[in-house]
Image 1 (cartoon, rainbow, N blue to C red):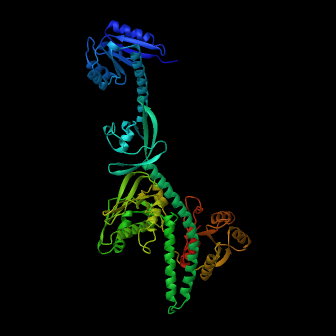
Image 2: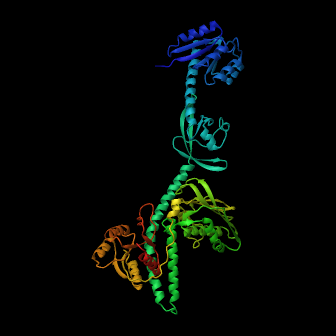
Image 3: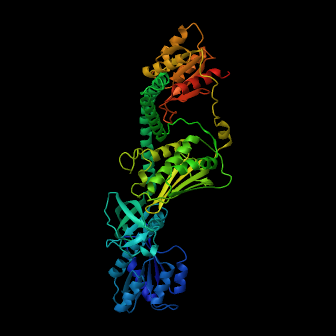
Length: 610
């Protein structure tokens, strides 16, 4: 069913009104509803109800004359097309009427059926196009993307609130003005805009539309800042996950090798006469092993696989106790200030790790100020911090390390936490310092960020969550040192790496222990089943092929519930599940270790009650 065309005729002359009725009596193509009023007052009253599709307006009415008649109607209903019919229509009046908003102007002396009906048909088409445009404007107003409608000449005809906010301009700065960027049709393209001096990346798409009855182009513009940031975070997380897998594998193999080097090196050094000239060679060898240990620990920290011994910490006290050491790490022409707010909240973290973060940042600050400067460490409490990647948000202790150095260029700022990225000369940096900081802070469920201005300085901000009551209770106390290292108990050593297994057996025998050995979990079970005596301690690697350390412990404890256990491993468990969770109530010795450290762990477990 076709909707009828509704016309309002504002005409005080009965004869002219009748002529209009006669004209439209022949208007057969579309149903027509014609309402006639004779005064402006009646017209205004009629327009308070449903609006017509078009108005036929005589300018000279009993209560209104001239162009003011059109003005009054247009103020009330600007979207209803008005066709002016008047007795006299000089060119200047016609131009005024069209400028005021009239859709068409017809002189009564020359009107015809064709001229009047053609004007009405155009007005109705325009009215319905304007109605669709208003609906579209209401729809576009709530779209979060910026939307602009541009006419064929490139001038803006419409802009929604999101576009106004995106560009940081006023609406009047858009309407009627040409766009200052190319408008490719169809494909999504990148567009960089400048808002308040800041460059903002966006995606733009342009499609042809009809706007107000005319051809136009609709441009949608989406701010990609957040999506780009999230994509970069995802890429960084995936990269760190890959580094974690790599670091875990490297650490496992390297730590085995370093443990073997330490075992034999310490043994030879202890048995070699102090006057032997090879003593210095062994000292250098053991020092190199220590440096290799430090490097593997950095790799594990980067991947958040570094073994953690958490405790309740007061970061203000930790920084205060570290101040003298930190000052010695700086040259004489550099001033260090440590400022802490009162009543700093406790956190649960590894003290050694936090100290490493502070020292790494301090070394970075020193390198950024070759001519000296100022480093400021500030510690305070912050409430209601926003969640970030790996950080739950809420109450936290904030550490800010600021320097007055050269600053970091914006082009490389997003890369500074990446493993092995460095701007230092070859041989002067591993590219692991900031990556280590990142890994340690993330492992403590915190967040680290950086702000820098070239020529002004750099500030690193660290957030560590405030300790909850249950976390405080669960923090580990330092393990007591045993009174002696020797023993006569029987130890089952389970290690798949032959060199490491042999070195541990050799060390244990030196300190008096009886040894059983196995290369994997299955063999360990067979050794236990075939041994007539008591096995006092199971010393097992945690990561082994086939039956791993955790499964072995659970299996043997079902048949030997009083069996004591000491696990050895190269790294802490990881969130991706590539290494097993440590068994509960089991002491762990982290590789690499020297023979004395191994004996302390063995003696501590054997001497423990229960």
